[in-house]
Image 1 (spheres, rainbow, N blue to C red):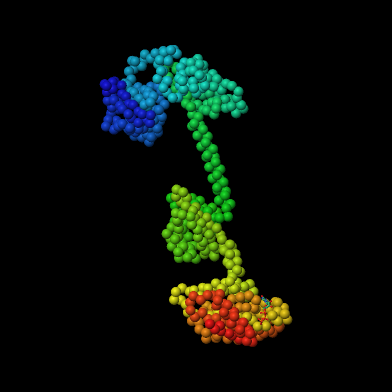
Image 2 (tube, protein in one colour):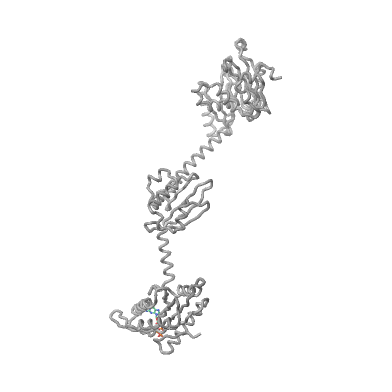
Length: 549
Ligand SMILES: Nc1nc2c(ncn2[C@@H]2O[C@H](COP(=O)(O)OP(=O)(O)OP(=O)(O)O)[C@@H](O)[C@H]2O)c(=O)[nH]1
């Protein structure tokens, strides 16, 4: 039936998708023949239309025309005439509540167009503009003198009229004043005044759309179009949500700017070096500390290099030379993991860096670099102090026991027997008593170096406390070997010691326990050696006693 009409028709749903069209439509717009289909977005339809119509030099603006056309399609309220394929067409758009919108085109007949009716009265206006009742936006039509001759319900709602008839005869300034009537606080007064100013300005120089504030933080956008016979059509769109969104966006942008500035400041002031690699592998952030800690040139880092380029730069300068083989392999493979991780590495200049990485949600990594050289040195010092005797620098009792435990349980097949020599000085107390503690200290230090000299490399010498020492003799250890070392120690300890013009002498009593089998208990061994030492003391000092099992 529709095909028989002289009117071209195309109906779209609320999402601007084509629902149906008639033959006349394809006759007027043959470029759509065979292309248009149900569900096709209006934008696609328009694109085809413009492709058939635009001159090559206009093609660059195609998408803009399409976007504007879609907006017109949604907002169009009055017919307009255009020429297509040499024919003048009058296009009209009609909202279809619950369905969407119909577009209609008919061949413009100039004779008919010439006989447009004179300015409508409110009554025939009501009839003529009845279809505007279904438009969601507020619509008001004014006489050339500015008084409203017709308005729809949406207009009345927007400006707070109970009935649209109340707006008839008023100017839009009157309507605006009435919308703001009542007690206003200072902020509202300011908004109202600004709205009046905008209104006066725009109504005088009609044309561009403008926005006016309304009570209760609402906003209206007013778009004016000139109609026939001096009539002016105003659409009043409630743009409150959009304005609020714009405001939120503005606040969010401001916050983002502030937090970006804050972030930059923080990054600059941070003690740590920070590098951020984005999802594309580009180093987006590299703070001054990172450049300094890693000796990275500013020019390279400001050029937004890829992380790979930075690593290549470092390889070329032997940055990773002191790193372990495992770490080198990891860096060679890209140096990135998809989970948080940390490692330490030494730089060629000896500094130790702690490198921590966390993956960024959505791709990329954030890496921090901290110079932990001092921390590591202090830790090493503390650890050394905890395991060594401050006076003689020999390892202390705890460390000696650990070494003993290691020797007692070596890896399978690596046990070759060992011996523990427990050494206690004889007649040490009188040295302290006669010459003072500081001389005693020197004697202890001297004995320590004599023990070190007597022992072989690989043996362990420790100070067990006071004037007690111990030696862990390792490797193919037999009783004879142990006795040999003990004799060498006796010999060297009893040599004269010269301290501050004093010549002093001490001797040693030595007890020996030999571990011939693996798995023996280190404490028991030490106790046995200690007990044997006491036997040596009891037998007259300056001698060696083997523990007999
Ligand atoms: N100067 C000095 N003396 C210490 C130190 N530690 C312990 N002593 C002293 O070393 C002495 C050890 O005592 P003893 O083993 O009874 O002295 P000794 O004269 O060697 O006696 P015997 O072992 O029986 O021969 C004590 O007088 C402690 O005060 C130290 O670090 N420096």
